[in-house]
Length: 406
Image (tube, rainbow, N blue to C red; front, top):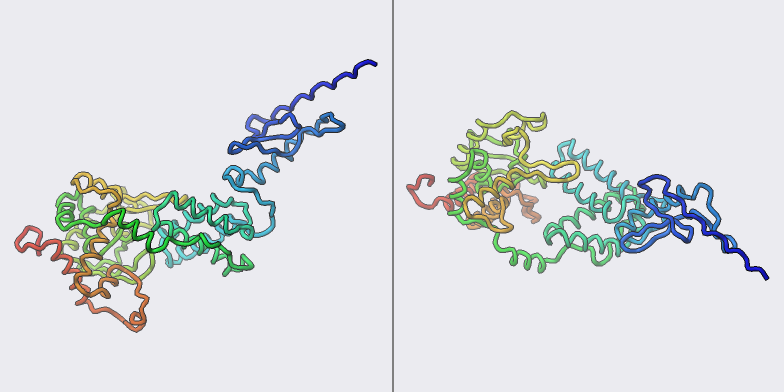
């Protein structure tokens, strides 16, 4: 009996264009190796009675569609979900940011806080995938999100990020975009106080001595940096506080600042030392012309006329205060790891506590008071606020008769 002839192997198709992400496999499927594992999509040929029969058009369009539907999940190491109907993570984040932008436009929220939310929503889209349906998220998803955040950030920022994440999904429920509240599971929680205490102990004290602050003031490279250092130690100002400070909040004739914290909107009133008033006068005299209309009201600007702390639409921060203060620390030999400009705010809170008037200290710092007494308290007398500021001033310049002493 004559032997049957073996059918010739079907030649694999070429890619429809050079950057086509899939490769033809001998099985007749299109394939792609992702994170060390081969995945198959569509078919360029189908097997009929043991023989591969080419698919019309090589089936590359259908295969590409299948790949795109799950690409984000596969490349991120997530199991693809098949559900397609419902509110997506990307749509929820966009709606949330739109609502927050309206608050910024109305003057009810600082641009700094908005960008903090933007960083959070970017993380959600990256971790879950923009096309992921919110109702499909499970406790495992949020546990993985927390683990990813913990690898990048310390416990304090991790806790803040978890709080902001929950606010995104809470918004979705309250705005009727979601039918029910999201269940995060038992792991998606802020680090407990024991973790924060251990982290603080490991990091060491974030504070300067009086001698170090005096050296920073004596060796400040310009009037601007001298002014911001004095605002930090005199009034507990942070980076964003100095950057956002409006002209209208400063009264150099009386020596007072009335300026709600940009981060929280909590009222704050601060008495300025004569040295701080003088430094602010000098900085304002040399203030550059504002580069943008929005910066006209800012009291302190860079040499280029821009804000001292800015954030891009992508959430990237450009902090000139942090950069220049770090350079000051290095030039004076005071630099220590994890100690930056915010250390001056720590100085004020720590030293001012010795005045034994924590209510006045909290008002200067812009800290919220959740007590019932705060509900009934209408104001704190200026005499108390001034006494707190003078207590810190005496700590900084304790020797009568010194060049910078009171």
